[in-house]
Length: 146
Image (tube, rainbow, N blue to C red; front, side, top):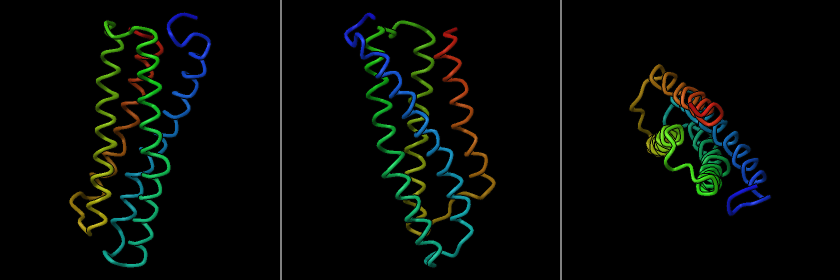
């Protein structure tokens, strides 16, 4: 094992992958929740239940997972000194974009909390495809390193 992480590198990598899985699960779920949330009347009991579900997903899965993914990912990047490699730069750009998508989901959650419904169900269903496409490209970049 090389780098400052030494023998712990594999544990950090395992943790990184585990929390990426949690993050992706949350990013797949949240827009789907939004689709169902928008189908209920603003201010109804069902509306309040969806707000609670979305808030729990945000607090318990999405936010902690994103933070841990970034910490472990940066540790691995510095350990492997990947900063000058093209595959890593492309992956990093996509991870930043996916982090922005996470931010968008939190912002949309706050709009739903206020009773706003700016997007259609169809738009939300299309946006639900973003994390899957990003994940596929990120995995190819990280594993194949073209």
